[in-house]
Amino acid sequence: MPSTAWPADIQRTLRVNQSGEFGAIGIYQAQRWLARLTWPQGIALIDEMLAHEREHLAIFSTLLQRRGIRSCYALRLWRVGGWLLGTVTGLFGRNGILACTQSVETTVLQHLAEQRERIGARDAELIAAIDAIEAQEREHRDHGAAMARAPSLPLPLRLIRRLAAQATEAAIRLSMRF
Image (cartoon, rainbow, N blue to C red):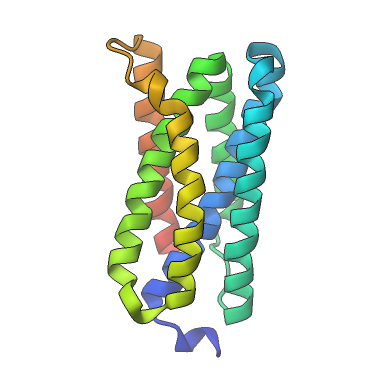
């Protein structure tokens, strides 16, 4: 089926999701690189989450390709943005990495729930992909949740959470346009 046969909102959803995985990979790559110095015992966890994001990217890329839908024009921007966010948060070690993960994944999970509601039964294959990926994204979020529930987070970590959420929301809005 040519891409023009797919509703515009489904095309945008696939583009946004593929782009988000590009960004997530950039975040975890940069965090992993810095974790060698700031949180070496967290490298295995970062590697696991990075592997999940690569699997998610493959799923959304396959769906786009099979449907003849182009990728988002801003993919490189997502990767650079991911690297920047991963670098900033990786400098704070365990707490920065987990605060970023919790914040980004919370935003992503909200976005996936909105997608599921908007798409409904119109695209069972896309909903099945979202459902499969959502469990891993929830697991990622939960890794940082215990730290995020601390009664009083230091200002830098509160700023990281806000920055990560706002960057993710802005990237989603940008990808919906391109």
